[in-house]
Length: 142
Length: 471
Ligand code: SF4
Ligand code: SF4
Image (cartoon, rainbow over all chains, first blue to last red; front, side, top):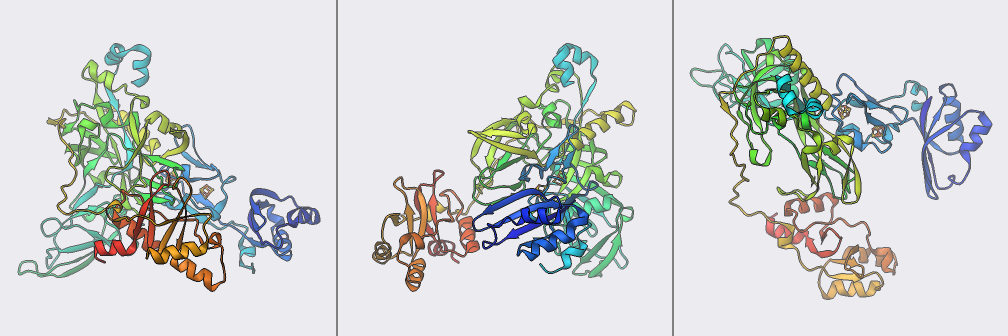
């Protein structure tokens, strides 16, 4: 699965764009987070890798801005399991397990549009990296 | 030990247990390393030195240097510093040394540039003048903005809390009367064996805030227990692993080493207030801290640590293994840590100004007034700022003469269209310097002064500040 960030302007926010695309392309689109009001919206969604290109194209055709957020990764060599990052995470993607190791839940993390934890890490173990399947789409016009 | 005392009592524990090992792994800013470079040819008496662009102190003779953990790289400040230099050297990496000098008859050289590893150094000793604080405060931030401190990143309005220290695993907490700790106590330091060389600076035993000064051969250390670190907008530091064995010499020590996290308390302190005595918002135990959330007033706050409990446990376990395998021998201190040291604040011979010293009465208006009335008040009271308050005197907005001019230019007539709702404020006990910085940062010329309930107490203007601070 690949994560995409969709931005809808005021003029199109009322339209059921996501639903239309799911029906039209017959692709499951999983919504991770959504902040929508009458002035516009921001949605993070997950789509299957193989459908990424056509889904992105379909959203762009309908006037949505699509970008591929970077993923947040932790270098386990550098991480000292201090815990400084844990309480900063708005979605509780960072946990401390039984033996006091700090573990990241990549599925939950909303990626580089958040990045709240990144500058709090004293060993600079947290980095944002490109999604490995994002090469083709990130370079195209947004 | 802790469990044994609980289940079988102090007597049994005293008979069964010989030594309790402890450990802690946290950021310790008062850390550093002494190195000796050997002489160059022609020789140089170093005046200024840098390693990997980090300025290095030159406290003594020609080629002795002290790498302070908090010194920051001139090229990458806040990201790379003395702590990282020490870690790099310990890891066996090559570093670049640059030095300059004024040149003397016996030391003619004025510059040098060379590459070194730890093997090229004569001595490389970790020499930390304050480590291993018995406990730390728990930090929160009441301000409306995120603050970056030595207690980490603190989100606005008490949204998170941080703490440091290993609690019941902390070395000094297990021997709070320093019966077995003092000059000459052999310890685990950075992955090898080191020594306590006396009380640390700011040692404050009467408030259970003891510290130690330590020394160890850094050439033998392990980067797993010695890590350079960066605290955003605060600076660089060094994480240091320390473990102390506590021999159970008497029943009292059996009892003391049984200390639990729920018996160790610390204050929840508001780091949003940049003063020496920061407001204390509550009191919590290390048990609560380690549980991941604390309660302050009626608010539940998520809390996490800055020091690594995982590594602290590993240190205590390693020390235990060393002792069992006969690699580590306990020593009796030559002189115990003092119990009567007093930690005094700095004597200040120049006065510091606070917001309360310069604030003036605020000219206010109410929500339901007309723009016209507010404009008139600006003229008659000859001020530039009108503070909007509700019936209880609480801050709801601010209107400036510039806002009114602009409103007229745009043909706006309602007060509601003109007022700024998101007001940047100051607190009365804040140093004038930080208030002044905030004005500059937001490019504004006054700050309403409010109390904790957002009641308006006055206003401080850039003009008043510059009169007093003379800039
Ligand atoms: S980037 Fe944000 S969501 Fe992801 S782990 Fe860090 S704080 Fe949590
Ligand atoms: S702040 Fe960095 S070092 Fe500490 S637990 Fe998080 S990722 Fe690991």
